Length: 396
Image (cartoon, rainbow, N blue to C red; front, side, top):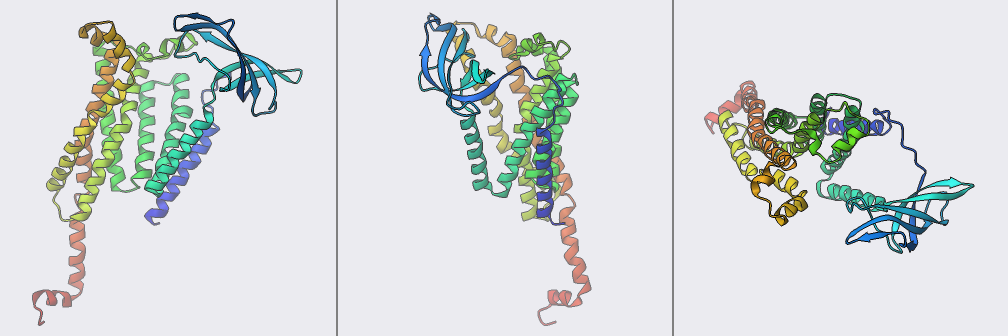
């Protein structure tokens, strides 16, 4: 079977798994009671019941909306927008806004509606389509496989990893198994079912295992627990008292860094593969040295990847500490800041070490390839004495 056909069959297999996962419900949690959903346009606003204290709004905003789709399209009725006073959750609407409405049906008409936020689903779908189109135009078949890997990651996390945690599975072995599955699918679908894919998978998993071990060690050394994550305490109050939040936090560390680790491993493995193709006679040590030079160059920029990714998501927190004039010692010693420091530095350990791991694995995989390439033409020359004669003398 050709490599092209094998990779397409592998892609179809992954697509089939995604379709199956779409219909799987491992969590088996009863659905929260809800009514119908529809896109609606705000045609009138009543703010008479809203209480405003500086920038904080509380109580209820009443909206008159017109449904834009669904079985009751065109109906107009009044819905409530409950304001809790938390700006991170509340939204305040104006006339002509388009919102997502949840409502019940009473005597054939929509009633008891609630606003569920500005309607964003169409824009999200458009953004996903544009992303897939960009991948397809830029990378062709490889971009298509990358998009398939993107969908597969989302489905595995949402349909496998999260439900298994809710059912009480241990976060660390479950997280490692999920990461191994994701790395295998992504590296072999994008890199191919070949030595490059094997090297990428092996180097990535070695980096992830090191990150996991360091995360376990330093989370205990830092005296950190999983409640430092948003909504962790709320999850316990929802009835899941048996969840090990600390192990979930540790799993989040190596899962979050696994994407960057895999990216770096693929770069190193691809450069090692290209070096061997262009110079099949290269020795093992020269091959490894060449890969290490590439690894050192890539690591120079990759070490700041996690720092920028994590710190930028907490800009407002750092601005608050600065505005309050808190000492740096107080800021860095805070549990949620220490958790991010651990996240950044431990993840960076995985990034730095994945380069030598991948280089070494690639060097071992390609070690005898050059020798085989040299031996093959020699054997054919032995079967054709005329070739040897031509090599010895032009007048043979």
